[in-house]
Amino acid sequence: MPDNISIRTCPATPLLASRAVAEPVILPGAEARERRPVLGYAMVMTAATLWAVNGAVSKVILTTGLSSLRLAQVRSTGAFLLIAIALLATRPQTLRMRPRELPYFIVFGIGGLALVQWFYFLAIHRLEIGIALLIQYIAPVLVALWARYVLHEPVRRRIWLALILALAAGVAASLGAAGSYALYILMAEHRIGDRDPISLVGLGFFLASIFWAILRPWWTFPAHLAGEDVSLHGHLSSIHAPVWLLMSWMIVLGTIVPFALLVSALRHVTATRAGIVAMLEPVVGVIVAWIWLGESLAGVQLAGAAVVIAAIFLAQSAR
Image 1 (cartoon, one colour):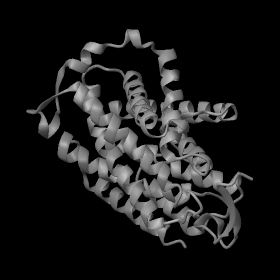
Image 2 (cartoon, rainbow, N blue to C red):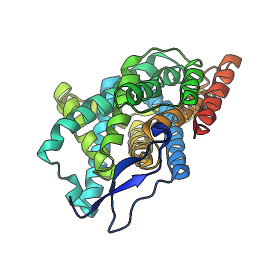
Image 3 (cartoon, one colour):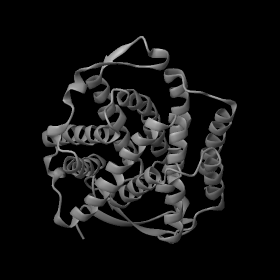
């Protein structure tokens, strides 16, 4: 066993009921890493808020005529390049990919990162942001089903009730984005003990970038669109911003920061709980889209937001 790994018996997590399990813990030096659920939940909620704002930013970019596929390519490649530069300057050894890790990162990068972005951009291009996000968040149900029937981990009844309440606020469709998101969060939880969150996300975006470059070579990219100014639309229609600036926001605050926060949170909370708390994103997304883009905010949507928030609190009360 490597010197920097210890095995400790930990108290039951919410998904493991009353069982105690032998849990591998990566040690920074000689200290065991402690789970801090409050910090984990704060990370997930911050990530969800940033993603919600990013929905409006991305929808504005899509009005320039840039396709959903190209926008997903920009997001993946830009995120990888910035993460790679930061790691090369600080911890270059973390960018090494062991041969046995390649199959994992192919699935994680393409199925869990590349496709979830593409399906999401397709959805918000054709639907209101709040509706698209609510539909996408069938993913926590897939995570809970995987935990229960594949990993054979007990899932408390209150968790199932929380998921049913949250799903009642939206339509169980758009399985493409939901499936990709579920795959991403499950695979990230599986590998988080072996790698730091930044290199994990960075290598995932590296494979996603290669995938998009094969489908759409960069020399065919409509680069002129990045230099154009675009109206921010809705209630901010009188304000214009360069597309490259909006893309920069999307890459840094809409991609690198929230993805890193979510992966880091999996050190402190389970994938099922992280998925439920992340359902705050459609609630914030509806509000942002209403304030910024002027999308409708009817009584039924307010009721749906209240149901989702109730589901989050219900899930967290299941100790």
